[in-house]
Length: 262
Image 1: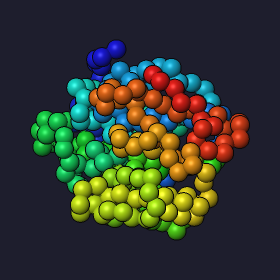
Image 2 (image 1 turned 45 degrees about the vertical axis):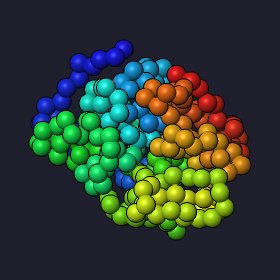
Image 3 (image 1 turned 90 degrees about the vertical axis):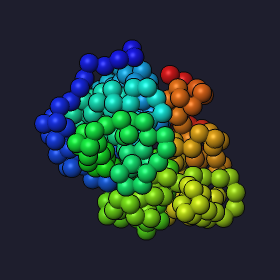
Image 4 (image 1 turned 135 degrees about the horizontal axis):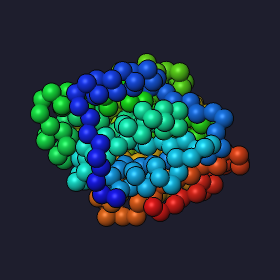
């Protein structure tokens, strides 16, 4: 499938905005058997439709890791499809925020979706995606778009403000398999963090595995297989992958997840 008949009018978008306003910044998943993690989709409507068709089932929860628009040819269709699916299955699908959902906060390129909207639609869509959650946790797993924020505990995530340094870490941060904590600030491009930062924060948050997207040239597995980077869009010229976590089994590191090509 490469098209969608979904098209929200302004009143519908206003109602959708109120739905997301009810969700916290931190999503805590409990009492489910499997979680399917989906990386950047970037206008790849086919990828989103396939994941929903194949995995939106009883006892499953879907977590999309951000970046639903720009780059691909079906940005609005992809975002509208996911919004509709969320509204209809609110407890089974979660749409986390990536850097491409923060165009109104910190400009980025390419931004073909955002630049193609009139001012009214731009502000409506921006006001919706800015309310997306930032982080999801389940069992020993933490999932987000970029990098761990500098927080003392999970509860602090709900207090993170848009545009703050912690928001930039979550939505813009890259990792490198190097010693050190913060290797480069956002002022020089994208904030870059090393092995010591990863180990410090994941230990502080008492988790075993990080699942993320955002960084096309990152190794799939980093930091002794405790960090997994996935992508689910065809625009990167690489395999579209998702990660499946069976929470009924022990999870020691990211190698215990099932990585599937879609």
